[in-house]
Image 1 (cartoon, rainbow, N blue to C red):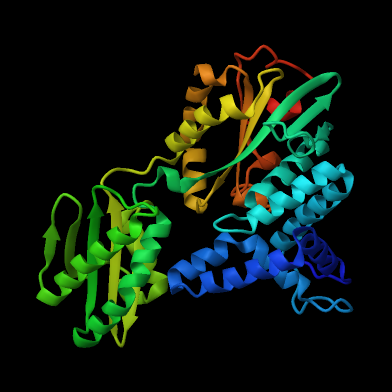
Image 2 (image 1 turned 90 degrees about the horizontal axis):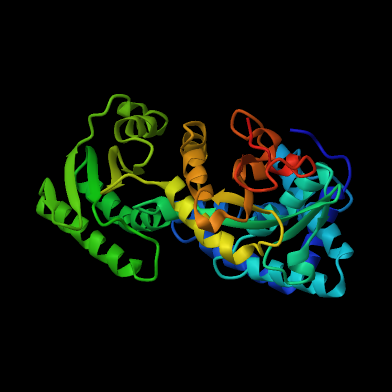
Length: 406
């Protein structure tokens, strides 16, 4: 971590808040405070999901005449650089574009929105400018369906930026699982007090579990089933919607506390399993849940690309789809990337009629957004796949933005 010697970080954070409007920002911070208190697991997930807003609020809280109480981390410096670009963009835009930008900021700070799409847009523009392109924010300035217009040596290309959640490819969505685990936790603590020991509840959800408006009823039903299992001292319960099995917790390494238990559970149930651990007294109750079929985040991304291309690109110029994969942890990003599953699905998309005007697709995750470098982050800031069938695929002028990553 590098230290800071002036109030620049505070100034940038304050300028971004001014772009959002103090009232909207304060309302959002109150909302995030409430979300963070919505159960230990869901609250932690909310803090991670809204890390950008919380980071900017923390940095603007530093006294203006002294450095922050601790050094600024590299990730914070990266977010500050993007925030500074958004503030500078607001000054460069026309009055119409500036008003549109402010509206996007306010929209991002309401309901279930986040600042990630806006930061992805700004970072994409920064990357292309660093590659020698003249970048116009056409989506803000002229309400174009795409976001950025690139120009270089007489060539032009459109970029449509989008965020795709890994939740779309999960049978059991993480947000819904965390809500279930938080809901059950008090019951498990009470049960452990009366039944000290180490237990493992294995849960299979053939129909999945999605974080939707109807999920509350499903969570209530699942909660009731688990309560009944515990109350009746049964070891298993199953039907077409759920399979429950309660066993002693006998995993290797499970006696080593959280540092050994979670990795042991992960090794036993694989990267797709949703895990939870509850402790009370000397007792431990672990849960491991899976859907009835494997997750397929790359396939979900392909489906999104198919729907995105016809609506966000005009077809008048070569089009680039710039995708940020959100809600994916490190393994969920590295595994399909390094095993070429993401490439396979993207190549499949590029053969479809909907991709006729797409010259390239690029991907990034929060790792790249926050400045991670290889092996976790992708070199050059994004993973790119060129469409060799596009008429402009061999354009020298567009090469820095479209050449496939090696």
